[in-house]
Length: 168
Image (tube, rainbow, N blue to C red; front, side, top):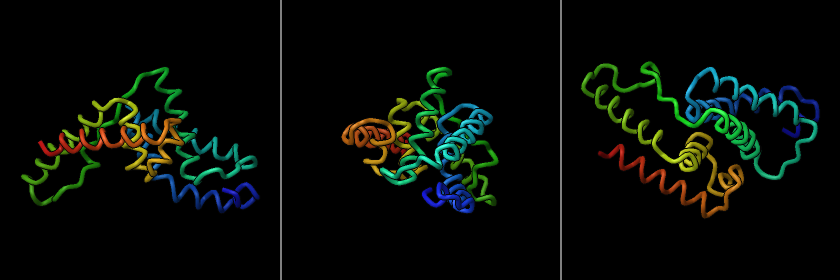
């Protein structure tokens, strides 16, 4: 980001390529509508572009990036509510030559997505930040404005609930 702020346009492309997949999945799974997720995803990158001249690293770039996404999600949730988008049928890959295995995978995915959607918002966000963004507990705390113990508890409870739902 410092290179991009210094005028290296190629540095932005590197940042975008490195973070776009996980960031998009994070936003998509946090929102109900794909179109809304795409708009919010683009807004995150617009904010990155706008901040290039004043960016000052105080944490990892990833933490800063997901803080922007978190803040935009909070703004959205205040207006619209909170949900998670289930994966489309064509996004699921499981043993294409084994119908029984596909059915089992669909059922497990459905249980997981239902459990993910049922999580309290703070637990769901902690889980998505950890799994999609690869953030540590300390970074999740920084992004969400919670203390580390709260972030750790949220993540632990989310993992336990999701594991129990999938194991059923």
